[in-house]
Length: 201
Image 1 (cartoon, rainbow, N blue to C red):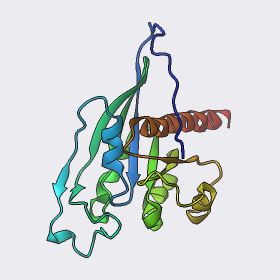
Image 2 (image 1 turned 180 degrees about the vertical axis):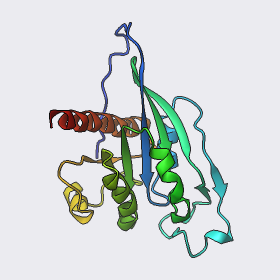
Image 3 (image 1 turned 120 degrees about the horizontal axis):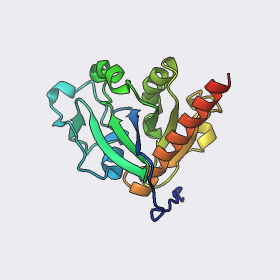
């Protein structure tokens, strides 16, 4: 399957001020948040990965990701320039329940969010969806195609997660920069449309 591409004229001169915005990337344990932030960041991403220990046994389900040996314990941070006048600061949340207390602080000031979904563990997406729904923060759902295959139709995933038709859902490969970039572009577009609708009343 193919993933979307973003066309930008990097040669267009720009004389105005640069705008910045904050985006949060959330999702279940092992859904690919750190990978996505690292894939799109034009700077060396800040990560807070720690080795998984016996303390995680019985709490973190690694059945779908048996080779996973580290986990995010605070946040991931990266930066990407979408155009000559827009810089995005991207914050990845920790996925495990015991670190959810950090989510409120990470979401402060964000214009929108990504809920990264692993369809092998679909239920893990519900806490992130509920979090953004309750805070009325615009979000998009990105289905991470770990093996570059979309195993379920997008509308079937929408139905399973009981997501409104107004919420964009797309497939992505969190390892690929262009694919991850398209997800962030979708967030920006959705946030702008959400803000415009609010202003219109």
